[in-house]
Image 1: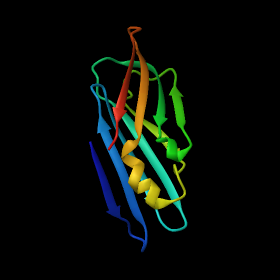
Image 2: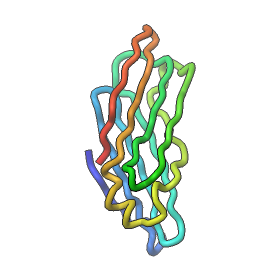
Image 3: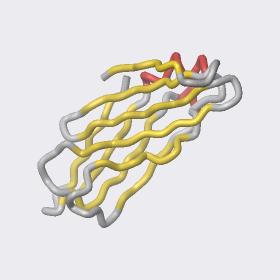
Amino acid sequence: MSLFLILAGCVGQEKVGIEGESKHWKAEMIYTVSKSVQSGEGSIEYIGDEKLKSLHYEINFPKIFTLGASGSRDKINGNDTVFSLGVLNPPHDNGEILRNHIDEISITVEWETLSGKVKEEVVDLS
């Protein structure tokens, strides 16, 4: 698990990222932060052994962000292992709050394998 800051090409712009790993999942989220714009993107990657049938995820933000996000993928091609979390709205319009609390985010993933097993894990990001 790691928190990383990257200075982006534009002056006054930086990328704030977090990543983490659980037994079956790797996750990454990156936010671009400037004085006027914040945007984010992320992905989760299945690193388990079984083929996936479906999944549901929920991004758990700290209460200070006053938001949440979730998504589902049904009828997954058994060979797919990487899934986009889509464009992520910034959890707070204050870049300093984002930088100070981004490492408190986690992702809960529930998935079903082709064999019918249903599992759930939390990926802690930092």
